[in-house]
Length: 209
Ligand code: TYD
Image (cartoon, rainbow, N blue to C red; front, side, top):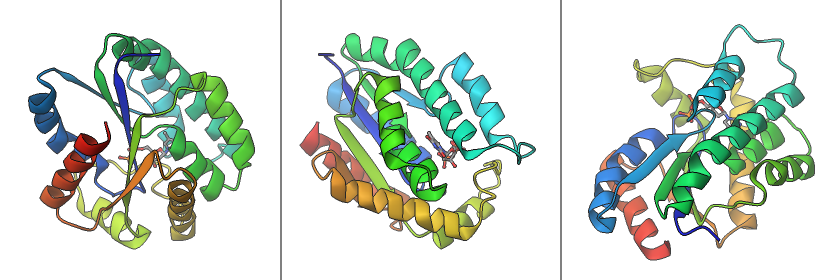
């Protein structure tokens, strides 16, 4: 068993995970009196960042859903082995912006691929590594996509360009996951202000990790 703690952040596009993580880091570093590892999927290490470019490239409209799934899974494996596991073995707290649940929500509920197959592939890629805690930031796709459109710093990617129906299915996928794994996944109302969401996320981490 690893000594560190793995916390993952999930939610539809525009839920504000990245800003919440930025707000949480100083609070957690102060609490733990140690540095926190912050990383993201797909990406986080050079090979996985290269895979990310292929997946999210807006020109890659011909990408088959199974190809998309396998690329996310490949990026996950490399990132886990190269960055996440070594940090956990050293006893560090690791925060990942997206992990296994994104594949179930996006490629499963969103693209309609078999949930069972995705769970098997996740397990294959992670050797069964599961987060100690997952924070799911919930909000409607209408609000999420409107936030993305306003945020000029954020580049629009291939997944953002999908129809609103797919984003609704992704949200339904997350809500189902939260019901299925109530001991691991805690839902946070992401429509609140950033300060409120950060404060709530911090309390949840303090209570659960
Ligand atoms: P990103 O710009 O990181 O979006 P966000 O800030 O919302 O996390 O792009 C990642 C995109 O990849 C996002 O639309 C979700 C999608 N994704 C999947 O579809 N499956 C996955 O397994 C992962 C990790 C991400």
